[in-house]
Image 1 (cartoon, rainbow, N blue to C red):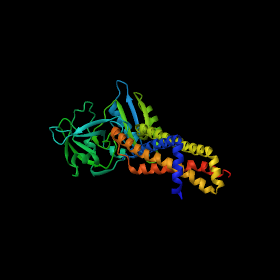
Image 2: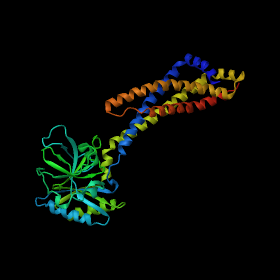
Image 3: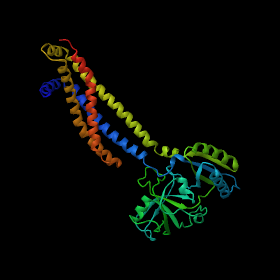
Image 4: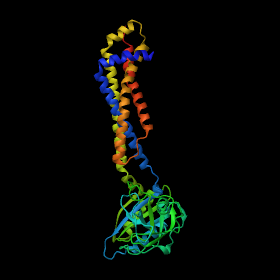
Length: 397
């Protein structure tokens, strides 16, 4: 029965094709934008939701800077750490050379030979003492932690060689493949040997947009002053209260230094991903708006066709057409218009997806998203045409 209606419907559309062509083009553009926007949003959501490897919900940072001539950084940081570690609810506290997930940090390149040949393997590194692993909340899966006697003193010139290193599993694989990394020797940029003594399961470094974000190494070295950056990990639910205590104590305990900020590590993660989050929100908003505009276009076309065909509808009713026949006629008509737009939009979506993947090194558009977009546009077209079709069926013979 539906196939019998298609020929007269196509004939009617061809006689008044301007509106149908415009709506089909609108559907095509909507499909291309919808599919690619949703795919890009999915990439951003996956990026933001990557596991950090750290107990990030229970970690906060304290930054302080000494400004007086007689400020003793070593004594002050020792006293601060002793006080922080003695607080009830604190699991661990340490000095850090930089902040994970902050967008700022230090990097080096490791080599397989002391001659420093080849491209090497990049590494984002952090200076910690023996409490670093516990303060980060990362999991040691091979080897051991630093001992207290292995921690090197402050070295502003970075001239003292670092004999040992703890690496992430990703960095270990980049350096040594599937071999056991513990006990293996690698070389820094000056050709000095560094022995891997431990491997942690996973940890994200400083730069969330870097494709080697998890190439992280921990070095046994005290960060030098006069700036001190404390990383403190608390028991669950006690972070905010201990943050307030730490800010008050450190501000009052040493008048020759200034506490610059006390912030949760989540602050830096959220700030680093802000551009990705804003892009996702923007694309979702634009896609929703475009979907509404497309539905309004289909609704307007169906309403227009009903209004200009009132006499024909009444004539069909008078010669025996049922209300269901009138509804089916307009629903099929709008389905044909939507389908034409969907076919054009599918080709446009694939072309846009290919261009985006080439320009921004994104994965190729997954066809599941295209199929989903087609089904959504078909559903939107039918829903938008339903009310005008019902109104057409109410025309009196």
